[in-house]
Length: 194
Image (cartoon, rainbow, N blue to C red):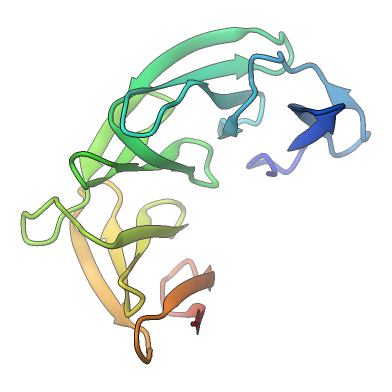
């Protein structure tokens, strides 16, 4: 994955039989220091100088997320994300989508602060079945999810409220693969497949 400023690239590579994470400076091609403790990276912070990664992650339990400094190669802090199933970090390096398993909810987090911002909801209902993350849009101010392969849902990332739905033509039960969302959400490029 590329840092928000485009200056660093985070890769998983095989060293023998062990996968490790490495950070590459895109201008020089040089590998930058990154502790081996970052074995499951999530993404870069907004300024590209730090990396978020799992310290401990077991689906359905609390995940411990650490923040590591790339220049210093040390862990700066960590915070807990309870009951997680999936985490997706936005391109701004701050906003994250967290899908929970037991509560069957979708949450927006501020990873810089290590806090939940809101829970996505439709008319007050937060248990959103078959609601899968697809993308962030409008500078991470919107969260786009897919519902049962038949519609895209657009939520406000600050309040969690549903703003609109976009129907996706489908026959039977199809999955949706998102190729892009324009910043103004006027265009959604997606394909459906069986």
